[in-house]
Amino acid sequence: MAAVTELGYLGLTVTNLDAWRSYAAEVAGMEIVDEGEGDRLYLRMDQWHHRIVLHASDSDDLAYLGWRVADPVEFDAMVAKLTAAGISLTVASEAEARERRVLGLAKLADPGGNPTEIFYGPQVDTHKPFHPGRPMYGKFVTGSEGIGHCILRQDDVPAAAAFYGLLGLRGSVEYHLQLPNGMVAQPYFMHCNERQHSVAFGLGPMEKRINHLMFEYTDLDDLGLAHDIVRARKIDVALQLGKHANDQALTFYCANPSGWLWEFGWGARKAPSQQEYYTRDIFGHGNEAAGYGMDIPLG
Ligand code: MBD
Ligand code: FE
Image (cartoon, rainbow, N blue to C red):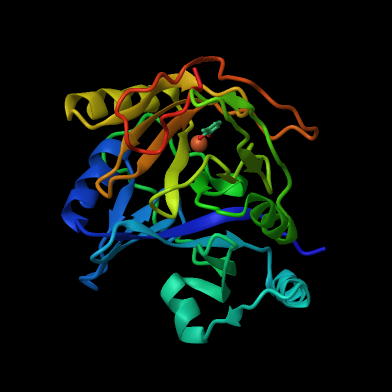
């Protein structure tokens, strides 16, 4: 059965490209690639041409997510599987694939309406070493684990779980979180490779399509340095440093220039083969800046 292998890329719409240029490079350490188009910037995290595209826009949200399949055979099998399941999709033109710097691409939407792309064959610039936007001790964790993970808006959680299951991801509820209003939040976490989760949803209504992007450093000191820079710049921190129960990553969540969150992380464990659930995190993750959709009791 055809299955996606990684969350490969993201497109974002942003209203302030200059603020993003500074944040992505000087806070996160990503490499800015400006090819002079004027309406976009590329963010590099490894040797791929890019992992993130920032599209200048009048909105600040997720524009699209790209899920990778291995090759054209898997791509055709995935397109056939989705079509047979009654999901409408368009196989993109060569020009559209070229714009994404991939060999082939299909466009569809997940049940939450999030623009979703299935692709194979990303352009990898092995001739161009990754050059971080600020000094870094190590690198970003990508490779077979992809860019990181996202929490997405889904109004119909079982439909979303079925859709991502069809793409080839596995997983389900990993927390029961007692909310102050007496309800119990039961977020879903799904994986398609060794990264403990590549997508999550089910934390309630959201203003934007995306709540956060998590990415991971290979070196603890890069997380510490990022944290110092975030604090020095007085950037809103929604969840303080802490360690998640499921992926056991040390992370903190801070606002990006689009007003949603980036989760900076280090030290995640790999996806286990059997399901578990948790009622809280290991330590930390205290709530700080409110209003970012992360006012949940994890700590
Ligand atoms: C995560 O990455 C996360 O964002 C939440 C809310 C809980 C566990 C792991
Ligand atoms: Fe997360």
